[in-house]
Image (cartoon, rainbow, N blue to C red; front, side):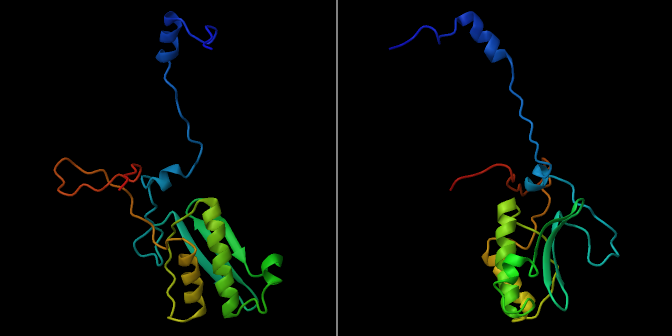
Amino acid sequence: MFSTKNVFPIANLARYNSTAATFVNRNPRNLERMRIARKPDGYHLERPGRVFWHKLMITPTNRTVKAEVIHFVNGSVIEAKTSELALRNQLYSMTDTCAYINLGRVFAQRCLECGITEMACDIESKKGSKIDKFLNEVVKGGIKLVEEPVYKKPEPWDWIRTEKPWEVTEE
């Protein structure tokens, strides 16, 4: 049955439509995800450069290996080490090829759980090396090792207009 208790009179309806709802996004990295945040330039003589939002760093030592994501403002955001107890108990050695492969899997999973799907990577590796196998596992895990460029608003006279990163088009 239809109840008259939940029906608003027409006079009250105008009051509800006049207020505009505001949305506040409390994600501090939302502009980076939409590709409209500023990337730091750094100095042109620096090597490696600082043009990134998130960057992959691998730190091998004699006993362990550490992989981390560095944010250009906040520093280390996500890290995975072969010296962690859960990972160390499953490995024969903490620095062999198997350790690099499993570290890549764990690192990729942690990045996806935190919402980081792309990062800059300037690590050069030889084909078939331990670091190459680590990077392959990270890519297999769903992480892109190249950050997209910052979106530049097209001018009216521009010939090519790129798709806006915050608009989703279904095909």
